[in-house]
Length: 261
Image (cartoon, rainbow, N blue to C red):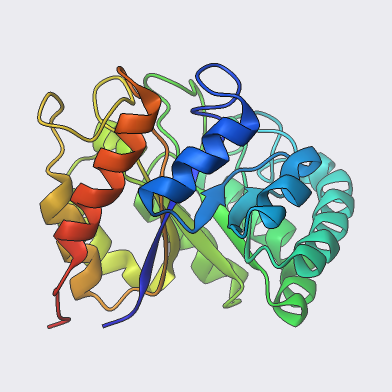
């Protein structure tokens, strides 16, 4: 079985719930070895704690993204700079965004997005960095966002034609948009390089008060032989330190002993 590493997202805890150093200490104590979506000004702090950075933003912004050809020159410049930084800091993944829908059809936008990613896919591959096209919901959190279904994201990956272009499958977002999470993951796993979690509704704890069965989902991911990060991106409703400990332990239990089919 491939090794799955649990990570946890910075923004969910810092600064609203914990100071930076408090969060890093609590994450390490819980068992995490990686932190997701760390702002660049805190990279050194994370590394000094002996933790890995699993992913960071590749470019701005969520709304003005790769589905607009007039943004490609800017995004290419940002991605090339961040690819170099990611290689320097040992960050394996850069998150990329389709942007919000505009006058282009879905098919046209897929070709435009793929062309934008293709401009830097070779540089990413040479640096050992993966470009993650993030799937987000357009119903609740990101109205108008284009990469809001797995099929569209898979089309972009196929058109880009590069192993360095993959999907960030956010379980919370895709539950809102299409459901059928386990079967979709099993079918699309060859194009998925990173996962985000979060309870639905509310993007809170991965507990029994929300509708997703994370024990079954994580076991299904493990059964595929996936090697990479599952990054928990949830806002705890209670004590953040207890939430970190509980989430890591329960997810580790779900993953423990699972063998690929």
